[in-house]
Amino acid sequence: MVEVVMAPCSPVECETAVVIDVLRATSTIVTALSNGASGVIPVKTIEEALEKRKEGVLICGERNAQRPEGFDLGNSPLEYRKEKISGKTIVLTTTNGTQVIEKIRSEETVAASFLNLSAVVEYLKNKESIVLVCAGTNGRFSLEDFLLAGAIVKRLKRDDLEDGAQVAKRYFESVKNKKEEVKRHSSHAKRLISLGFEDDVEFCTTEDLFKTVPVLVNGVFIPKESL
Image (cartoon, rainbow, N blue to C red; front, side):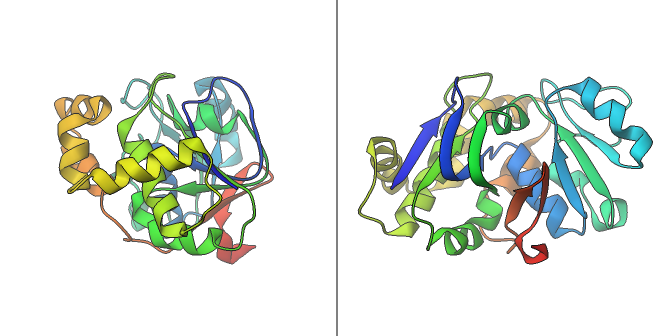
């Protein structure tokens, strides 16, 4: 079974969950681990993040797209360069992505982005029951998350699709140019561009820059190769 859940309000219970926040949390998680971070710990609040500073971690994230005061890095994946983060543990809190992770009750949770699309599909190909969980924006539907969910569903080539997965797949198939679709029609993308993050939108809609699949283990995202 493959299902897509859009901006969940209640807990999502499943075997394998794929959390999607294209702009920008899961793109940042994938980039951080691909560039040498030892792990990414998602937390719900700014206070939780700041409390972990004494553990020698980097405190990162955003509220309303901006880096909170006292944080080491924001939520732009372009900030997560090897020279800054290699060997470091990242504590990440965001407006949407890390909030949704808190709602997932699964046997395993992986983080997906366009940046690691093919690697995620390969990882999922032998999983029996999969729920793609779109983070959305402030509790509402996000076009870019649904578009990625549709891309994953199409590439899985499964017949056992629930309604949400069927619609996501059809939407993806209807889009001729995903970058233009996101830039022109995603309200979240347009807001980020207005705030000066157009390079983030361009980066986060680029396919297969990385082969890293982040898997959540005891509250920490680590590359599947480390399991």
